[in-house]
Length: 304
Image 1 (tube, rainbow, N blue to C red):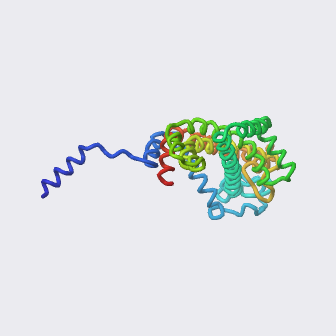
Image 2: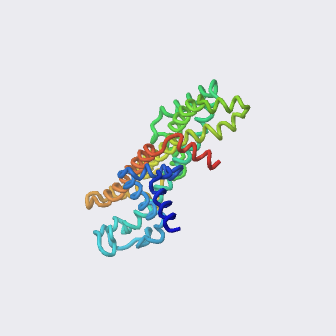
Image 3: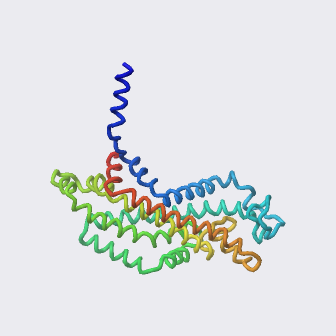
């Protein structure tokens, strides 16, 4: 019996291993890319630190002390700002606010742009022409100018600023989805579904949407980096997060008030914004290389 078991084990070792499927195959491709893996690790650490900021922040981020512009020390690891706030505590809270604001802007833009792109690409004709001319009109305005116009109409605040920023991002998602829909709807499996009498809504849900998700995921991640930069600019202008709340952009604004005394208050939030935006782009590149259209489409169809 032992000899039979050994022979079977030897036979199993000689057989080719079963190829990974689904998310395991995607993860296997992704983790071979060292730059993307490093970027993912950095983002995970920063996001966890931001989410746990109420717990791990060493001081109250809104507390004012008598130590103005104190250098880094064992009490204040990153020093204090011109008003006596602990920079590390405000950095953690500000990073969380900036990330949530960026997610809000990209989430609204991706949802609206996907719906517009699906309707335009699938229905075609007059609907396609009308929606694309509307997106051309929106794209004629710079993104920050669009956000500033919305804030001017609705008032300053993070929700209004991100709503305006989402309008600026929405045409990019709409055009991307429309192009993918135009390509997928000519595939043979879509034609077969039509011949079998499937309704348009069923075809869009079962075939079109799963097969356009890969470029959409990449676009979402890349837009997060741009949204983070744009939110920082809007907060710097005082149009997004309002005091006493803070964000990375508002920390930059406060740092410029003390630029003659120290550049530390500008460098710290600036480095965090740059690192996060760069890492989001690196992750998007890694996912684009690891995830093919049919991989994610098969995953979604299986889960459906």
